[in-house]
Image (cartoon, rainbow, N blue to C red; front, side):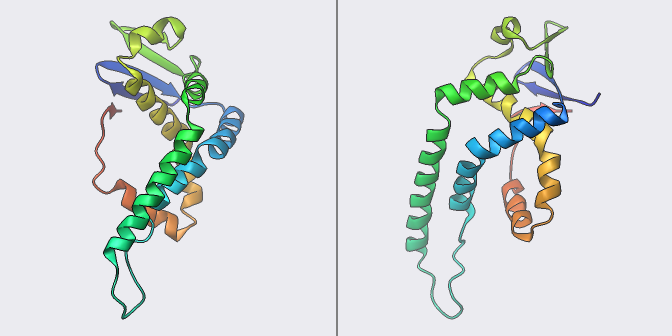
Length: 170
């Protein structure tokens, strides 16, 4: 079984893939609850880069103001979808002890309720692990579909430019 090792802080986590039917249901819920807001956020952040009509000057201030307004609206939409209860529910779904293990003091254990309090330094660690679980389970699938779209390929290239990791994986 393929597993991904991710180190967050000093803690090593081992992620296994969800079974395809669980992943399908989870992806459906993700795309309904979170991806539209993330899409609007990305559109606001990377939308129109100022290529005005040929021969006409570009109003950079107007473009920046529109982008800022779009970004604020996209963040508002995302925060409506991801309140505390929604984040906790997603954490409980994604941090499935059957698919996520942790190494604490040299001992591997399922990431169950008993080990969670020892595994995470703060909420940021939880969010980071959730990100890795989503990416590991859905990135290949999404890239296969995105690969069929030229604009999506350009967006992915922009998103990966200059990105830095906060954790390590192997």
